[in-house]
Length: 508
Image (cartoon, rainbow, N blue to C red):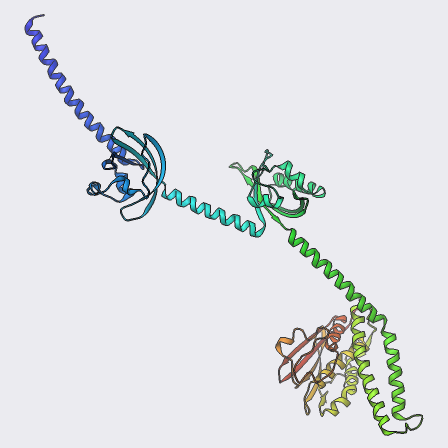
C-alpha cells in the first residue's frame, strides 16, 4: 500500500476514535440522566452517603418523604434522622423510626450496602402499613375481648378439608389449648353429645346442599368432662361461580344461661306446686272453716237477743255483741280467701242462667244501703231505666261483683258523699259503672290494685279493714264471664269502676 494512503488511513482512524469517545461520553451522560430519572420515579428512597453519614446523592423520593430540599443536605446528617443510631454493615435489612423535617415520625425499612467509604441505602416508607397493622391489631384485640365477654367465637371450615379454623374463644369453650389442639371436623363431632351428632352433621349437609344460612343448638363434652350448651350460627361462603366452598359462623357458650333458665323453671314449677297445694288445701277446707264460724255467729246472736231469757248482766250483752261482730268480720275475710282459692284452684264453676240485670243491681244496692246510711252516703240508681234487660250469667257471681264494687265505693267515700251506679247497653256487651267521689287511688297503685292482697296503703285508707281480695275476686269473676274490669281514678276526686259483661256467657 502506498505510504500516502496509509498516512491518510491513520488520520481517519484517530478522528473516528475521537468522535467515538465523544459520542460514548455523551451517551454515558444521557444514560446516567435516564437512570437518574428512573430513580426519581421510584417510590423507594435512595441515598448514597459517606462513612460519617454525610449526604452524597439522594433521589426525589427522599425530598418528598422527609420534607428537606437540596440546600438542607449540607446541614444535616443521615444518621441524625434516626431516633436511635442504626448499625452499619456490609449488607443489612432493618426497620427504624425516623424524624422528618417537620418533626413527624415515619417508619422506614432500609436495605443497605457498604462499598468502600460509601453507604448505599434503599428505603421504603412503612408508615401507612404500620398504621394499618396497628389498627388491625387493635381491632383484633377488641374482637377477642368482645368474644370473651360474649362467650362467643368465630370459625370457618373449607368444604372437603378436615381442619377447621377456630378463634381463641372457641378453644376456651372446648377447654383446649391453641398450641396443643388442632381443631377438625372429626374432633368436633367426637366432642358433640351422641344424641346431637346427627343434627349437627345434618345441619352442615343441608347448608351445603340448600345453600342456606342455619342455626342450631347442641351439647359438647369439654376436656374436663363438663357438659356445655352451644349455640351455632352459620353462613355459606361462595366462589365467583356461586358454588358453596366453605361454611363459617359463630359458636356461643350458652351453658350459664341454660342452667340459669333451668333453675328458674324448676323454682317456678316448685312455686306453682306449692301455690296449687295451698289453694287446693284452702278450697277443701271451705266447709271445715265455715261450719264453726256459723255456729259462733248463731249462738252469739241467740245470746245477744236473749232468746232463752236474760243473761243477768248488761255487760254480757255488749260482750256478746262484740263476739258477733268479730265473727261476722272473720267470716267475711275467710269467705274472700276461700273464694279466691277456689278460683285459683279452678273449682269455681259458674251456674249460668238468664237474669234481669237491673233487678240484681237493685238487690246489691239494697244490701249496702244500711252501711251507706250509717256513713251518710247517698246511693244513686236514677239511671237504671231498662228493667227488662237480660243477660246469661251466674246470678251469685254478678251479685258478688256488684257488692264488692259498691262496698268499696261506700268504704272509701267520705261522710256526706255519693255513690252512683249506671248500666249501659252496647253492641256486644253491657257496661255497669260504679262511680264515687271518694278519696281515689294513687296513679302508681292502679296497675296493682286488682292483684290479690293489694291495698291502697294510704294513711287514711288503712283505717278500713279488709283482706285486700275484693277487687282481685271481682276481676277474676268478671273474667270467668269473658268480661273485663276497668278502674279509673283520680286521687282526691273519686273512682270509677267499669264492668263489661257479654250478653251471653259461655260455660268453659
